[in-house]
Length: 387
Ligand SMILES: Cc1ncc(COP(=O)(O)O)c(C=O)c1O
Picture 1 (cartoon, rainbow, N blue to C red):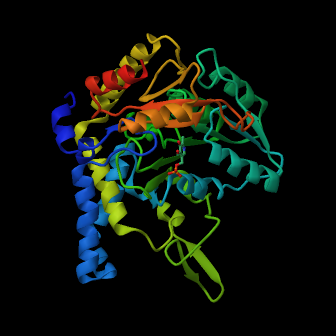
Picture 2: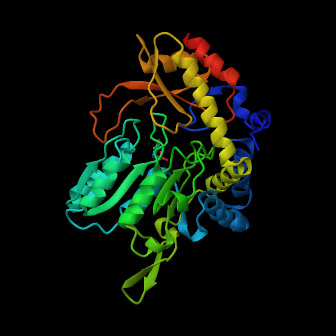
Picture 3: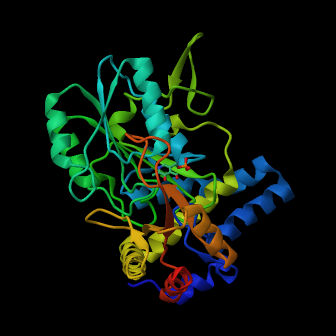
């Protein structure tokens, strides 16, 4: 069923004050999400934090099932985290690397992930190989195949939707190649979750990390991690606490068997409940319908922008998403962002290229990221102002 735009806008109170094209940064939460978070905080205020969590025990448990449903996974394969970077790192840092292993990464791997991998490479004597882009700008699957055949690959890490070039990487094709080669495939889905349907079986990934606040429309400070059940035993978390492990004998410890081995005990229960509500909200709308609406609106924005003299749209890829990037001749990206902010239109700025192989002084682009609750009229308003 197509998205009922009027209805989702009615449920998005922030739209009364802003035109929000910064969904790749952090979306506007729908009212049911905000009400869930605030409702739980009120219970904490009224009866105490531990007591409120106990009262919400079933609903907190259901968050795992909701995330599992979103991903086509099992609840035991899901852990919750405070942000996407931590979720991703919790699994990646626990990998039993052996010296001289090779890490294959996409050229648009998320900057924070690249730094983490550089640290792991330095500490474990690993080599990072940056895979080429194909002519469309997405990861070159044939180069991946070649590198897999060269052997000694510890891990392939890919960012599904890079933060600033509009494309969706062909993750399922990468997953297929990794599986055939028996290599662990780590997918960063922080920018794809909530705007693209995800199914870990079809994607063929072993690890997937997602964040709550972006296209999923959850609260800030929420995220999740998926780890394939068959892999859990091999990944011993680099940090333990009384939630992720328990004592064994007089001096030993036993790590819990499910993916919650990657969590720590204390957590933001209100945020988690809000995350679960956001996942259910997305599932109720249907991720196919969401993707169709988001991609359609983004394409319209690209077309309109490209027709304005002096504007260059930089997006690449065969399959495109809700992230639209552009520059305006004679104006810097920050200036454009401020100009639009003066008219209560939110966009962000981002580096055009990525640290996998780029210097930090990379050119900045304006990033206008649309969601299903944006309208054609809002697109028109943005383009009209730039004109
Ligand atoms: C592609 C990508 N991966 C990972 C992250 C990190 O997510 P978080 O900020 O929740 O740690 C981001 C955040 O912008 C991102 O764009």
